[in-house]
Image (tube, rainbow, N blue to C red):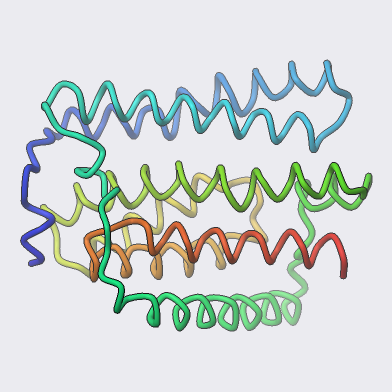
Length: 231
């Protein structure tokens, strides 16, 4: 086992379950449903409402992580993977980014063969009102906000907690499954979500830092937005 995943790790099962409560109950009900519907009524625009909802989610998760996993244990953000990584890992970052893009394209082709649509509400809201502002908003949300808080949450905390209890394979499978389930109900993106979750967890495992996963995640999401906008 990578000893980095044991260092300073004192999180209890109660801490893990409390974070999962935020992931599966509190945030989905109070923010993704109630707050999003309220914002939709205000803006009358799915993209604006969805982007602000995502920002609120990022803030809530970040605050929850700080007050549940960091402050009570006398830790810092490095405990959640926000630590430097070796410069030699830049080449693997490029390789894993290409692998993720190619693998995702193949998954999309397979879904198309089985008549599983690849359109979803988020891309539809962007293409419905396509201009410089909407592209910028979507890009910031997908390529900056989401990669930061999602990697801190799903790899920095959830994967690390699992890794102290399980082997690499099981930890990757469970954390990637959680990462996939939270993207419901966009069923057509779930295979890509799971595939990317495995890659992000692996880079964290190999470097002890979530920055490589953030970089790959950001590039992948950014390219997806640009392709959606200009294809």
